Length: 236
Image (cartoon, rainbow, N blue to C red; front, side, top):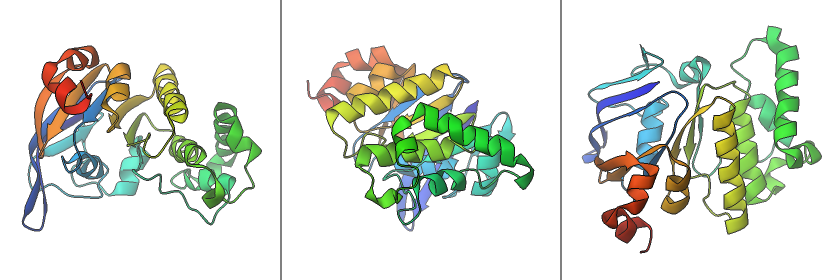
């Protein structure tokens, strides 16, 4: 479904991604783990079109998106839930969700309203707070809102960047249960996550990113059992 081939991304003289290549099959949860500064968020932003690689190609659903503008990538069915949630703090919960459907035609108003109700069914707390200013939500509620906003674009694939950041263990479990449920409903997931144990526990496959390169790959279970991964990322 997604193929990333030989991408090289720079921040000025800093070579952030170094010939990075990996793929995601339709229906998978694929986790990308690594330390701070490994290049995980840079990878997500490059796939989303927010950053540009000097080489290589990125294909989604067999079409190149290497030079495609970010809003057109969303329209193709690839949506990102960014690190830090990036909700619109001064807008209400419902307005944030409606912003997620900005790429959809005005002719879709009925379908958008139906999708809004589906998000409220999936996240009842957002329905309770639909008129509340989003900046006053708790961290977990903001994460649910960020995911719900992405779902309003009707994605085929979600890019989730650090969804557990700053959340309590109980909320982390809830967010990861939501991710598994989304996959069961047909949405493919690429997950960037510092909580390696949780990320690997739900992943079909995973990649370890170190200083802009893939250092290890395998199933979630294989990497969970790897001595190198356990020592570096699982505290074992």
